[in-house]
Image 1: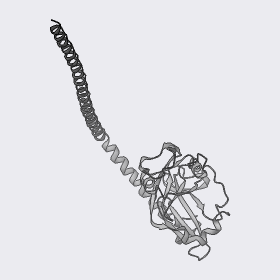
Image 2: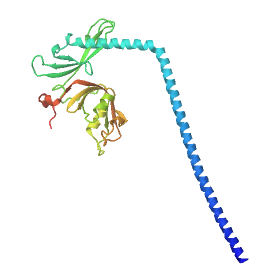
Image 3: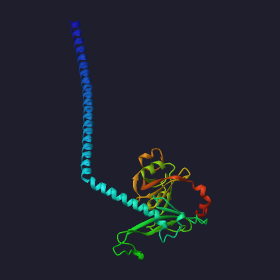
Image 4: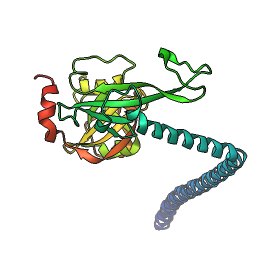
Length: 302
């Protein structure tokens, strides 16, 4: 009887152990299956959301194209007329700029003048034809409409409605500009070294610089970005040569470092100054060192 009781008790304990193991296995399977089901649901949600975003983006692009085509059809005539008028104005302006050196009152030898068109209308090498000391003159041609009485400012006369040359803005390199502080309305000249970011900035039509140096101190070269004004002339220097000339199109404003810089300027801070610039690459690059004898007297003393 005692042995049967012991055997019955052992079997009961064994059944209890097996029951506990079975319950634990069921709980483990339930947790595992629940996790897999939840992961599947999350994956399905992500796929559905991505499909909806793609579809909505496609609808938005299609709607934008349709609206643009409708706008273009409604305004096509006015656009073409405006384009023609702009083309005529540009052509007249370029013709005027070519004949300015031969008009009365122009005090330079026409043989010393070269037409550029952009970014400066004319450049004159005053004294070149006379084999004298050469002075470089940048010339910007200005025009205005003459009133119905034919009398303009300064006593200039012309027929009503016609364009006449009003003034010549000239800024001379050499003794004329040395030591002068230009007024806020004067064109100023800036020299920019672009060995690291020339391609990105010229192609993108801008200048960018950090606000401070890597050490956090003020840098006078970076600070000068805040002095650039629309219309200022910018010389782009890279690989020992002046590669392009630009005209500033805006004042500076705060802007993150351009992504297209890539690994260039890794030590620069992420927020800096940006200025819009219309660059024109030079067909004949200028190497200042080749003209150092002319430039040396104009350089500041060390």
